[in-house]
Amino acid sequence: MNKPTKSPSHNPLYYILLGIGCAALVGWFYLMRQLELMEWMAQLGPETHKGSMNLLAVMLWMVPALVLWKYYLRWLNQRFDIGGQYDDDRHNAQYQQDSKKPTETKDNHRR
Image (cartoon, rainbow, N blue to C red):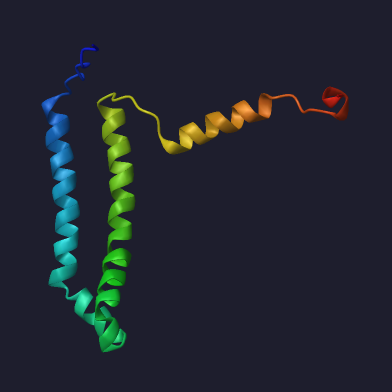
């Protein structure tokens, strides 16, 4: 039976800053509610599509906040030296690995 691995504990400041970032995302959403963006967007479409227009308003409003969240997390992880692999790093590594493979010719495929 395998023992569960204990994850390394991080600096408490990391968790505080992570919580502040989450609170900022929630605050950004509530700012949209205060500005009544959803109601304004719902008026642009027909009454039967009010829910779809609300969803569209949320998606459009949250895009800048989520992009900022992405870079904030990267900065936070670098600041506290938290390891991991980002998707673009994994993609670049795969691309480099594929480019090093020799190209196969018809001579290599003789039967």
